Length: 156
Image: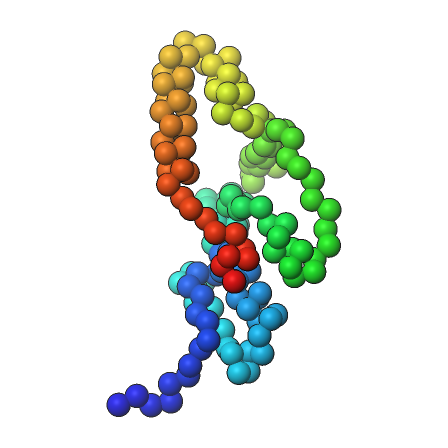
């Protein structure tokens, strides 16, 4: 016999960037008193892969690749100037917590530029680097082509 069962109009599993956006969007377009939303997250912090964590005295910021968010920003009425990525590199800052010394690693964007940088840095391993990068890229493309992601409006 069920007692005191609360009904939800929407249950979102996972409070990563997508889950949070989905729950917020629902709450903005529905009366949550009559159509409540429940957001469920297994971790003690929300954010999924978009978060920070500490390990052995080092703080790591993680990220997640997200699809183009301009449709959802427009829908939510958020006005922000987005700049198209133009192939710059990624900077990784490695900080020694004991000395405060900062080392900056600059990685070029794009598979071919990244592969070329590795080959220039480690010329004796050029063949292994080429084989590894090419194989990894082929796997990525195979998986990417299997995905069919609906647009924000198709989800709604």
